[in-house]
Amino acid sequence: MTSRPTGAQQLRDLARLRRVRDRIDREYAQPLDVEALARGANMSAGHLSRQFRIAYGESPYSYLMTRRIERAMALLRRGDLSVTDVCFEVGCSSLGTFSTRFTELVGMPPSAYRRQVESGASGVPPCVAKQMTRPVRNREARAPGPPLA
Image (cartoon, rainbow, N blue to C red; front, side, top):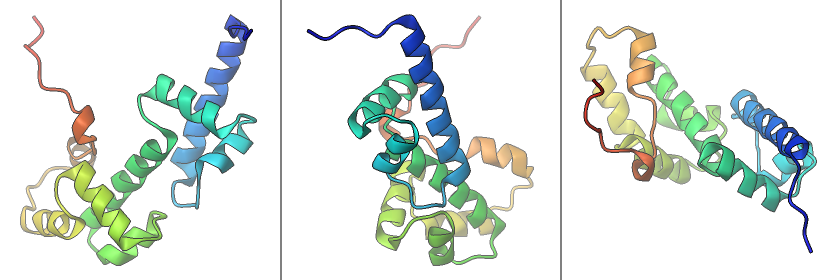
């Protein structure tokens, strides 16, 4: 018979999950895997993955890749690094995987994104561009609903 976690245990788990998320945000360019994140949180990899998905709506790996792609977009907008350099700068070790994930999240390959940014200098302030271009996983994007009154 398994026991259900108490309220205090759930709060401790949420605090550990926040620390994992914060670590991903800080160390996105480092080689991180679920096992290492779980060890740092004193959780099993399976438990961390399940609880992280419940708390944040995506797996730790998906969250990590979203942070990496978000940073890659900023570096590509800056324009002084090649796509390959950006790939390695954000912690990806495979240009193919990086390009696939970038295309999945942004809707176009990194080289096309760079060309679009270079040709479309729209005069939008960088802080607004960052918010407007924040990557959203296609399957998680919600259709716009009716305007709120």
